[in-house]
Length: 483
Image 1 (cartoon, rainbow, N blue to C red):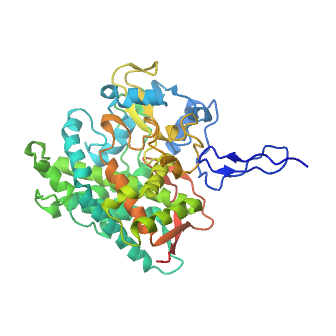
Image 2 (image 1 turned 180 degrees about the vertical axis):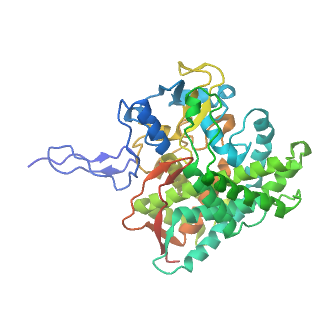
Image 3 (image 1 turned 90 degrees about the horizontal axis):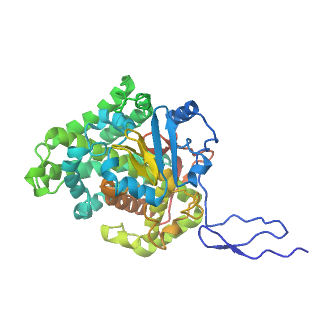
């Protein structure tokens, strides 16, 4: 009779597990860990043409196994050198200490979004960025977050009421639902009023179509044009951008002259939030409103969508979430003051952002030749910081591909390795807004519903401008017992 192997610990979460009897070293699957789907990795030795084809199709399938272990990588794509900062030191050199040399977004990102967002903060740099960043940061950060958090809970509660009225089996596309929810929230926060369901649909469908049809590769850049080629504005791209901009423009007109009463982000930006010298003109307001609307609804909607999927596949995490909600909230809606106590809810969102960062690649154009971790980044080339790689790096994370929210309960994540909102001077100004929104919306809806993945649906991550489940996420809404 063969002796039983001694119990071991799951490297990812520390739970004790046992192996089967026998001489073979067979490890059981940890019941407190789930490995969600990810794209197939690029075969070693893939040529430039094949790599470009993969880039045009999806930005997640261009990475090889070694990219999840290396600290810095380089490659040439036609006439451009690309340096990938893949360690804490390298990330700091690009995003923090060397920000002045690497602040400019890539030509691909600038060209892809300029038609939609103008000179909005997300793709601007230089003086435009310096002038607008302080006021945008001020209106979306903590001093106004308490008022905005009430809007978040009210909108999520209204969505739950609507779900309650659906007939069984209550099948919904969770990506569409979360997009509608976050569009309603950001609409109220930006414009001081609710965005109608028709307005939200126009914006959501417009941005989705725009992502599907806009060129994100821009071969002109790789052939030598530093600014890349202007994007081809085919009929689908033009119509998509027009749908989004028309709604934003009309909402600004409907608002009239914004008042300095703190009622909306737009009012605060239009008046400089008490600093007349920082007040924005109409064109700047349109561009920043479009930018905040896009960033504020798209990224949080994707995060919440992935969180629902992960919870539906990780029963232990769902149980711990429900236990925390019952203990902290006792059946009442959450408030801003509850966020600090919803530690496991926050850990779920943090782990979701680790596995499925809304913007998986942060690309910067190199201003002047400068080393990154002793590897020269050439003037005009690209320096990449890739949350998709860093968040699954085999050196910096235990069980890097597993969903384990518990890893965020023992302390802060590794510095300059966990970067879902970027890092340094160009860290996303709405990071705290988005994190708070995701926590409050998840808590509000999870008290009343337990979504499960629709039978037979295969989830496939896909990255165009942002990381979404390809084709949406069909789920069934199971009503929870109020007790």
